[in-house]
Image (spheres, rainbow, N blue to C red):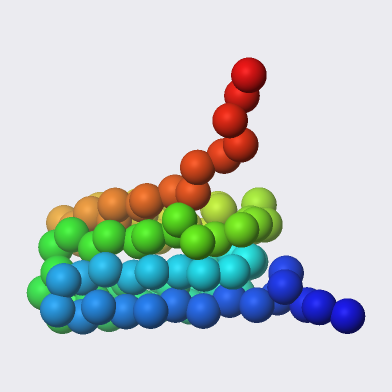
Length: 91
C-alpha cells in the first residue's frame, strides 16, 4: 500500500529565496511551507518564490493556508510568487 497522499517534501534555496515543494499539499504541509517562507522573508528576501509545480494534490485547507500566507507576507511588505502546477489540458 502506497501513502503518496501524505508524502510531502520541500527543497529550500536560501540564496535565491526559492522553495520547491513536492507531494501532496495538506494543511500540515502548508504550515511547513509557511514557516519556511516566513523565515526567508525575515532573512531579507522581499520576494519568495514558492514552486508548487511538483505538487500532485491539495486539500482545501492547504490552499487556504497558502492564501493566508500570501496576505501575511504582503502586509509585511513582501511578496510570495506561486508557481502552480499545470492542470490537465482541456479540449
